[in-house]
Length: 278
Length: 317
Image 1 (cartoon, rainbow over the protein chains, first blue to last red):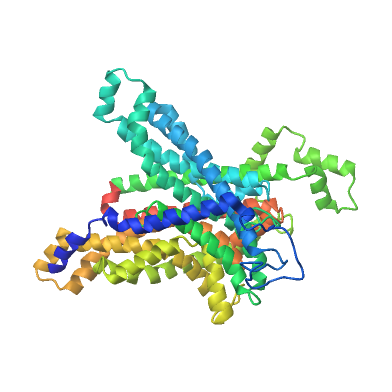
Image 2: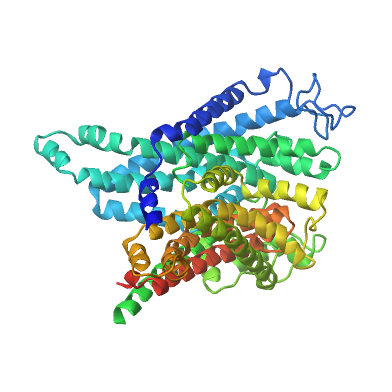
């Protein structure tokens, strides 16, 4: 009895104020990552490709703040270059998956009927395979190509936006307020802008953040299994594969790209309140 | 009862359609890979058949005519999918053995790993989920929430690397990679299991909180049933449905995880074979392994669908 009573008070979702510190942390991490990605290796003035075979696997020093890898390349510069590659691809895939996904979602909800059925069947076809498997196959058509990876990720991720937008748009287009606006003779563009977009905006942001995290993870996973981006490009997954044989001499090196990847995904999850969508 | 069979039939039809779509996508992508390869396919196949020194242009032309490689690509794609529809997966271009034989041995290892991962995730998620669900917003609840958020952000292969470095390299508790015995199963299973449990322990927790908050739980307590009996007889049974449903949501993560984690641990399963085949341009193997993984995904989903209908009578309508 008493347990049930205390529970009813605690089952309420945590108040927004409680969630804010985590979200703020996410924003701060995102800002740091954005600076790293925009600046790239130029931030520390080092060349990520410059080898120095006399200074391999070095510990952090003033010249190399994060040490050097097995070919004497500056780790900090390589990590920054990897951040540039992963985050730009993630950002682009959010746009090329999100815009068509959301627009097609609204179209499917607006027209219904065969438009809806055909688009829905196409979305189901993409969802028939686990996402990463599809990305892996599409990237394998032309291994090592940035474009194949990018196209594969975008083609896999648009479905999330489409399904969410379609579902929410159907609900909001059926509301009496929309019907009233329609009878007033307001055009479709105005209806979508005033009634649908405010409704789906926040949800789309969440999907975008999680989609970007998926994109970053996929790039690293494919790089790690030697199917995605190829060496000598500095990419986090490729760096993990390259540095794995040197765990005994320099375990701190392999952990650096791992940490970068985890921080990026964590930043994206936290910035949209990762606690909620667990 | 007829309603029950009708709903089971609907599930079977939907998943059957999904299986067909999987086969078509895998077939088309493999066909595209075949055509994206540099050079002339007829010469390549002739060289594979007769040896690089024994073949000439005439042999290549004979192969081209025999396999219909001079047909328009639409016709070739149709033939390609036709072979797939007859379960003719061909021979591995690298090993020369039938793809089906290779897959038959690998599938067992992959299923073992997937099973181990699910068991590991339940070992972690069930006790934690029940404990946090019985004392929501307590210290344990908040700590596991933070840990769950963090672990969810760690990709499976990155977690695998860290676990190998800690438990295999530093502590030397488990073997690093390969497959020699069941001790090899532990690290990869927990790598995947931790990722699964990071989310599912919250699902268990929410299900337990809901069940503990329900009217029938209150009724069981007021009629004099002890707290322990209420938990074991009523709460856990009702809480199990969302948990089983959630296993279905996690299947995609499981299949993706198997592909990548097998590579981390050099596990002799299908995912490892797929990655190897892509790297070695062994298209017959790529097609076979990807098709098997896709169909495995469909089959596991079907099992979850049917299990949900078995547990909860409400689903049968």
